Amino acid sequence: MKKAFNQHNKLVDIIESTKNDTYTCPVCKEILTRNFGVSRQFFSHPNEKGNDCELKLGIMMKDKNGVYGDSEIDILKKEYYERTFDDVKIELSDYMSDEGYYLTQEQKDIIFSEEDRIKIAALSGSAKTSTLYYYSKERPFKRILYLVYNRAMKDEAIKSFGKLRHVDIKTIHGLGYNFTGKFYKNKLTFNYGVVDIIKDLNLNWNRDMELAVKVNEMIKEYTLSDVLEFDDIDLFKDKDGNTTDEREDIINKSKLLWNLKKEYKNNVKITHDFYLKLFQLGKVSLNRKYDIILLDEAQDSSTLVLDLINSSNVNGIVIVGDKFQQLYGFRNATNIMPLFGGKEYKLTTSFRVSQNIANIANIIIKDICKIDIGMKGFNSKQTIVHKIDKSKPYVCLCRTNAYIFSEVFEVVKNNIKANLYFEGGYSTYSFESIKQCLYFSKGHKVNNPLFNKFKNYNEMITYARKINDLEILALDRMIEKYGSMIIDVVDSVKYNSVKEKSQADVLFSTIHRSKGQTYSIPVYISDDHFDIKDIFKKEYIDVDNKEEFNIKDFENEVFVLYVAITRCAGKIELSEKLIDYLIMRYNYFKNFTN
Image 1 (cartoon, rainbow, N blue to C red):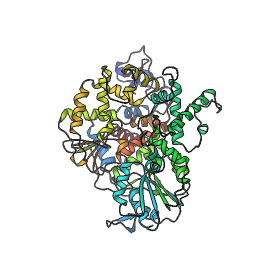
Image 2: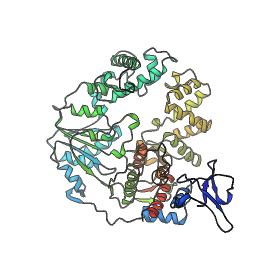
Image 3: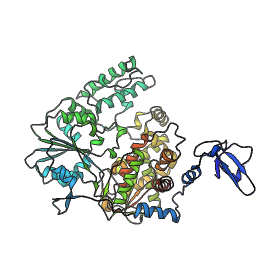
Image 4: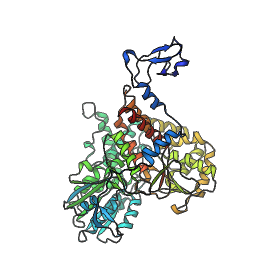
């Protein structure tokens, strides 16, 4: 082979090598022999090892930074963008929709299912809402409660279910609010954390910081769980699973804080999850009002919600979810599909995407999760393009809020008058907080409930680093990167923000917020998701160097990418990381599976 690592871990070409250095193979890590003759110069493996290493290295070294040669573009077109799939068949039924098209056989099987308890594994874009609509339509004499994940999904469901008067549509928190939350409406907040715990329990800022952090974790775990007592939470036990004095202190402080929150007339704030927990603890029976409960987004639910449904005494239960769209594990969300007892049905045909995107979705899930999901794409009008036309309205999907700010910065820099729409609303993206944080860092007083908890900026950053507060640390990074430019950018964004998608030149969304959306205008996937090419390389190519690497650790990240590429019903531009992975994957399997 022509390249190897020297003892300084630098990749060196054989021509630049010296006889005094030691060289190892970049792929298998074997020590190589340096052969430097008149006509040939190369590194060789001992005992005829490493026959595939040079080819693997060639695949690993391909990194074009968005610039692709004719051969690579040809690979993308033939294997991914314009490939035909004559072997993929979609079975339609004889059941006709209100609009005059035929539903799939999978949908019909669900609509006329006879079991009381069923669960539906529904892949992205597979018309789960339509399926639930026709399921409900065929049961006009049943009283049905349809529980959805958030307000946006409720609004969408109302458009479909509005004419079915026997169906009530509520968010899960909305259901809990009607029973318990309404009594706490003056105490509600969206932002309750460690600083508030220190204040409400009268703890010492320096001595009790760690205790407050652990009380916060205990409260969050309890709030989302199905257990009845704090003692049933397994956090902070010793290595043998036994309780400790520290754990007892945490539990006692958690109980004290919980009781303070339960009081109606004090200043100890509560979150929406608090009153939902009270609702679950009440074991409220719903069978006098409803015959069937439909639960959507079961993959991002909780054991609390599962217990709430099981305790409702309602006979008919239908839960729907897609484990590959589980995005809120970082909020302790739980996929309750495996925990729910009921017959499983599947929806595998996506009406949103083409078979080309369905193929890429199948590939990324198979490579990272080792599962064949068998997605089929029904939308023949969707296309994958090398570049979308950004002079016309388009959607920009980003993994993180910080990257959205970077993308917004580029748009505003090129077009100061561009109309901008933000999925979930402008105010939810904390642009004003970025601006206020900049002022706070300069020593100015600001009207911000989070920043005002601290004496100064340095104290806030010290706190954030100590407990790894991602929100504050992200703000700090943006201030370091953009500095005083933040003021002009934020002012322009606020002035140019529009409330209707149809008015936007660019529609911005995090991938998490885009879940459940279908975009008909072109979609651009930003490059801030995980490096799937690097993970593929470690798992399949660099197989002899797997120290501290487990591909299962990246399942949640591939779920994010799966959601991103399945949002678009029109033209879609894939990220460079995804393109590089697709090319590497083709080259690998072409050379090592024939």
